[in-house]
Image 1 (cartoon, one colour):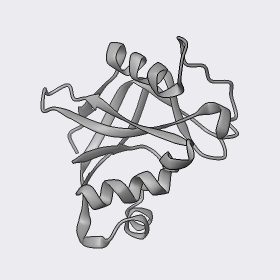
Image 2 (cartoon, helix red, strand yellow):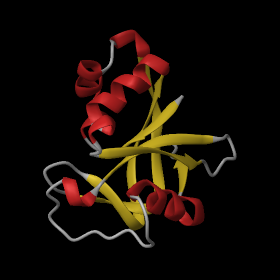
Image 3 (spheres, rainbow, N blue to C red):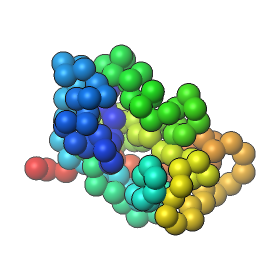
Image 4 (tube, rainbow, N blue to C red):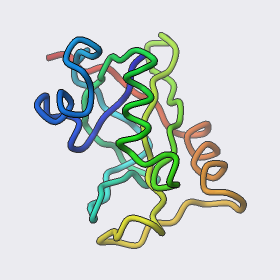
Length: 134
């Protein structure tokens, strides 16, 4: 499985601390179109723009470790699938709930209902991941 990372996990040393060394590898640089990075106590993504990052390949145990690191069970982040522009399926990425992260700017996700539903609605309409050539 591939995960688009855009923050601390783009650093190989940090990824190695979170994941066991033999359970992951970087698959190259990528750009996520349709969302941009917002700084705060923990960075997250917000609608519009684009953000550069890396694709991290992990197994099921690695994905569980990333969920724990990102606080999915505590409601800090949600893990969502984002389609790839090359039609090679989708990749996961983590998007933080702006009300829980101490952000430097106001972020709003359109629509009503649970945070995850609003995020998935935006991703479905406007967001893709494109592999960049290194």
